[in-house]
Length: 484
Ligand code: GLN
Image 1 (cartoon, protein in one colour):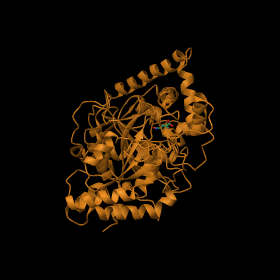
Image 2: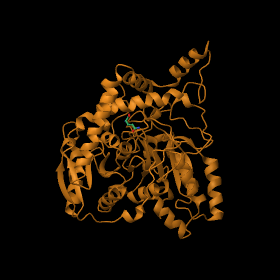
Image 3: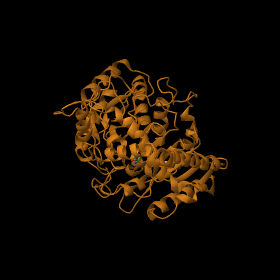
Image 4: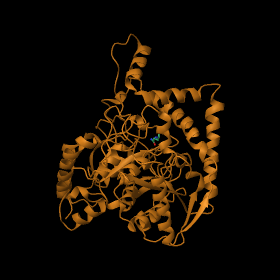
């Protein structure tokens, strides 16, 4: 039998049902794995040894029937867990222990999941590499000289390195899909409104979504069904029934219409990525899907619009971190204003400061119309591009990112090159759509490549169907990094 930590949640559930082992055995195995490996990947900011052991013991004897009973989950460090330090990988939140659970956390606990710990991220989710964390960069388990992607890099690396079974990430412009792609695992950004964000420390409220990072598509469906659904604590969560996603795990794409946007296959894309995506499209075509070229004409403006809207919202969301209510407060201040200045100067890292400055600028009087309002209009155009495309096709296939994982430090001094990493994921957030990233090959350097499938609003089922069919006809998801 393969090691416990190398299994998926659905495999572990089957084994537990057969009585092969109990939750405590799973937790002991995972904690040992983290002890062996985490010094190399540095995926976690906090590991809950004691509390996960005691939850597991309780489940051993109660034999709870929850959908995730006894299954370990790692939580990105911007999602509140009651009483556990939650920092968004920022110095300014050091010591902050939320007084409540995020709704997704509450649902996980109710389903019997065991929370293994908090995972590393770019500070406040600003980034694509996990390098802006106040702790340390997380390393890609496929090559520890490289970034794991970001901002949910800790969650993706932990899943890829078998340091957890499941993980949660958040995605504002690609932060679930891009690291999933770079670590060779499955990442899903649900439709805006599908999953409650109550208890997610906000980056850009009109874009943020929480979603699953898993080893395969079946686990993605399983985890989404636990966290999805209306929540009266988040007015942006939509009151629609949650479908039985398991039913969408069918292995056929006959009659499915796939669109391939011509604007996404232009210069800047690594030829190895291009080749892998083309092969994946051919495979789905061979299995009976219809493939047609589509146009998303406003694609080239997406990045510019995002880097106005997202920092604008971030600057407003981050205004509350001033040393009064949360986390860190700088010492030595002469008065209140001085305390604010010292706390924010010392508490935020460079990328956070850049975003606050940018966001404050585009919202300031005189510039609001020229930048923020204009960007919102571009956003509408981008949404209309997708609406038009979805009149003809059921889903859209693109690369997740133009390149595989880059080296640590390579893009840190050049924010624009870092921002380009999300060129294919950002339009999806601007339009509020669901999209999944799944492994579809490797570069010559043995680095994973990700395939993105974008769906219509609230049609995660089509994503699961296309992704599951692709996955079950390939072996990429079975490959694991050789890290010991
Ligand atoms: N990399 C993008 C950014 O830096 C997206 C991050 C995210 O989705 N949280 O804003």
